[in-house]
Image (cartoon, rainbow, N blue to C red; front, side, top):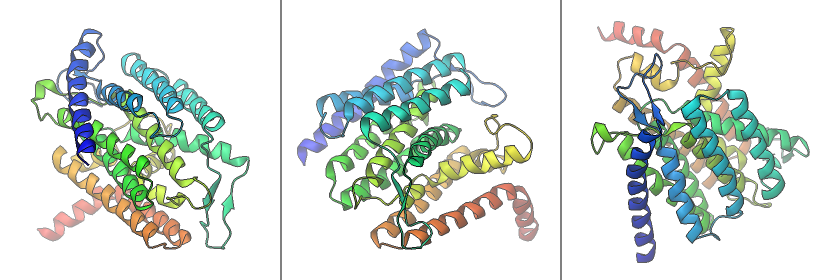
Length: 352
């Protein structure tokens, strides 16, 4: 136990020092985020949160190569993503190029890591396990690209991406520990510890002048790592530690937010990939909720939904029930987001 505490403490300080060091490097090469019509922060902020987390994770896996299956393949894939993300942060690459790279890495993951969606379980309550066959390759590509961009889209206010990733890794770590897969559970804990220094600097804990952002390199790293671990956990033999439907609950807020905002964009006749300020955190801010309170509310919602998924897994609730309940939550979420201004106005009238 003392050995684990020492390793995690060292990893925390390693990540913290790396983040401080990378700040100066980012400023020299102009890898910074400048304010514009969508980004309302002040000053140029270094975009090195994700790079620092990757370096810390790389250090850990180099010293513990057997804890994560196919760790070399994972490192190679995430290295490519971090490079592409950093280039996108600096030069604003086309989303088509990013999607192409993400899809290509998902194919590499399937071919060399044997990580793909073989089954989605008994989603419709028929008693039959739904296997995907060759269609699973396409669904896996969509799942990888979707997860990466879901976490990318939700990165809109200080601390939110870090908070949501901690919720996801924490929930997954609990499920893996419950299944006695302690190595993978420990990896989840390592990811949380490596992320905390970024969150502290991102929130301005060490002063506003030392603030950093995650950047696309970080959001793509987080999204890919999440889907890698979810596939590893939900497609692991005949009795995996995690049913596929539970994975939906662990990433519920990023997934619902991405789906809801794409639906709204398409209904307006816009591209689903056109950036705007209509994500859940933006809407709370339009209502006058502070960034700190928005972070707390959204993270609490994510934790609550993840807890529902964990309870459903532990108590073996029917997969179909959990799936339909998830769809119901999404419908309610979408209705709430689309009508939140009307709801807020109605509430104000009542309270007056």
